[in-house]
Amino acid sequence: MPIYKFKHNDVYINTIKSYPSVKYFIYGGDAFYNNTPTIPGTETAPATDRGPGGGTIPEDIRHTKGGSVNLFELNVNRAQGDFGYIASSSQANPDPSSAPRYDSSVTWQPQVIASDPQAIEPLTSVRNTGLIYQFMVKDSTRIGFSSVSSTAFNAGVVGEVFTGSYPFTASITKEYYSATDYRQQASEISGDENDGLTIDSYGSVSHLYALKNTLNHYTYVSPFYTYNAVDAPPSLNRSLDDVQVGLINVPTIFYGSQIKPGSVNLSFYVSGSLVGRLRDINRDGVLYQTEPSWAAGSGSDAGVVLYNEGFLVLTGSWDLTSGDHSENYGTTDNFPSWVNFAQPLVNVGPSATPRPALSSSFLIEMSGTNKTQAITMFATAPKGEMNQSSNPTFTTYYTGAIAPANNQAYIQNQNVGIKNIVKSDYNTPTGSFERTTYISKIGIYDKDMNLIALAKPATPIKKTAQRDFTFKIELDI
Image 1 (cartoon, rainbow, N blue to C red):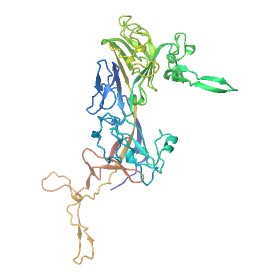
Image 2: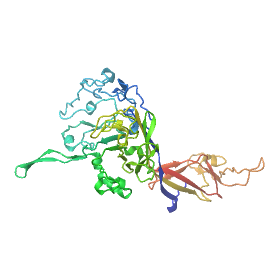
Image 3: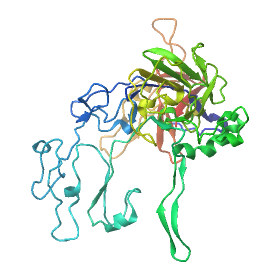
Image 4: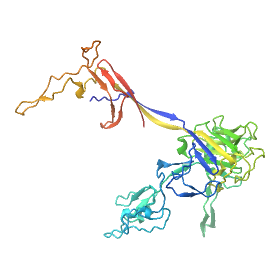
């Protein structure tokens, strides 16, 4: 098997950039990602009602909503409950079906090792929840999860099992800030230096205020990113500290490294009719109302997009229907406006009560940015080489070796001919002899001669001494 080393110009590493589409449709407290529906599971538990119909609906087969993603798609259609321990002293192999599926009253206890009262049997402390989850046993290696503190790890006995939980999910969220909602709160300290200081309450900042420096950083792109009116041009007489603001957060897992500039498209519907649309028409992150042309606020700026961070900051507070529609969005204004966009998703922040807003629906469209590293390799089969094969079909016949009668010697047959497969214009004779092989596989090896990749052409490639080939091999890394 001939082996050739790649030359300097034979290997290239490129970056392939793609822009997958991202779409959210929001209605009645649910978000649907790329038209993915909520699929009821046959084994999942009943969930409380999330919609306007009342009663209960089955939990999604992925243990999450249609607008969320489940890391690694683990625990699909698995029953969740408390089924005791994997094994116990009272019942070595407990039958999960013997315990109520959603009953937490199972009382199996870990088994203490008789020879060491300070240690427990690991299998008897692994809880059976019905779901896949990560766990790690405390032993002499002292390896544990980074999420477990040193104090908790040291307090555990040998054989104790530390666990995590699945599924890990991510979903789009919305926060609403009224003009009077807090952006930041200072710590309250009482006492004096002589008697000692006491912290009565710790300060905090909102997610909106945490983005202040980031927003001000992008003022070189557009002045509409300015957080405070003090630093803004006269035309932007507002501060995000004292106006209504809607903050939409799109997790990175949905769009990759960046939201594609100019791709954001927000549509506001009332009773199925479009009452407003925002687009970044200048590709500078500023969202302008473009449709319908007759709607109030047409042509006005209504917010900005942080493309690298995945946030949409909405500030447009005018009535898109000019008083034709009124609805409870759970905000200070009960009419369609851009600060009320996607308001049914409000589940964090100062205003934490979801508002179904059943007459309104919302559509978010954008494109993500995915960068994939790809390596391109040019493997050359030189002229005059690679025309020998150890395949038995390469020779005219195979007789092995000639051995004398006493079986004391081994003599290699030196007269085995190479099969001539050159075609001729005539039926009986063959053409002039020419060494011919077929290349069917190309192996890629690392510096330690470990096979790391194998390329196969669709059909074997005919190789003669007068021909050379260069194979282009591409691999995502």
